[in-house]
Amino acid sequence: MTFAMSVHQPPKSGARLGAFGERALAQFARAYPSASAGFAHELAGHPLLGLEALADAAARMDPRHVEVRAADNRNGEEFAFAAPEGAGAPDTIRAIGKAGRWVMLRFVEQLPEFEALLSDTLGEITPVIRAITGKPERLQGFIFISSPGTLTPFHFDPEFNILMQVSGRKYFTVYPPEAPWLTDEKQERFHRDGDNLLPWRTGDELAGWDNVLDPGDALYVPFKCPHWVRVGDQPSISLSLTWCSPASQAQNDAWRFNGWLRTRGIGAAPPAMGAPLTRAKALGWRALRRAGLAGTDI
Ligand SMILES: [Fe+2]
Image 1 (cartoon, protein in one colour):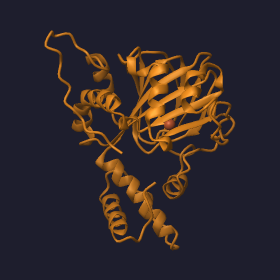
Image 2 (cartoon, protein in one colour; image 1 turned 60 degrees about the vertical axis):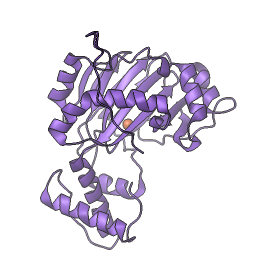
Image 3 (cartoon, helix red, strand yellow; image 1 turned 60 degrees about the horizontal axis):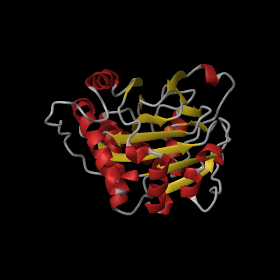
């Protein structure tokens, strides 16, 4: 699911409104695409991002895109689904302070008012993205509403991400997208089975880059950088914008192609981002899909 981007139009008064100031955009531009970076955002306090507005949004979204999971998790273990508090996810959101739950609104751009907010926000960063990695693709929005103390176990995501903290505090720890945290074998397997959780070893907590995110803080998380997240002692609300680049999409498809080969007994070299062989494998995967010879993308 994607949403269209609109070009950000500065207000005629000259006052700049929007998610990111010039300093934040410059900090993002210096880091993108490979380095993580923290910078400021202006969406904390936005009327769409309060608990009651989000409870209302959850009630109007496709139920398949509203996930409720347990808050009490450990790194290296599962991130289990849990029954909602009260009558459903909206009640869980309203009671998030004591619910012991993590609620995710996935593809929130399916609601027009959120589509407009996300489009405007992405319009601000698109010039930076386009200049460095080409036209952004598969633009998606997620909102996380979490009880105090929620731990999101160690995992990775196959996209670029800016997480904006709106309410409460998050401790967000990021790792390089490489072994021993993210191995080639795990990447190939992920694109077959969709399991993005990572194993956790003694000492891993000391190896990551720790970030403390309060309302108004944003964090750019590069493509596939492993991370784990812990919420402080107040309920947390975060908005996440994700996208892919033509090269990251090709690498994902090349991993899928490698997995397809492996199920037929053929091992293939890990696909390097932007390499000609990676693009060739991606074209191979897309041809297999069109011919009905491969499964769905993960
Ligand atoms: Fe994540």
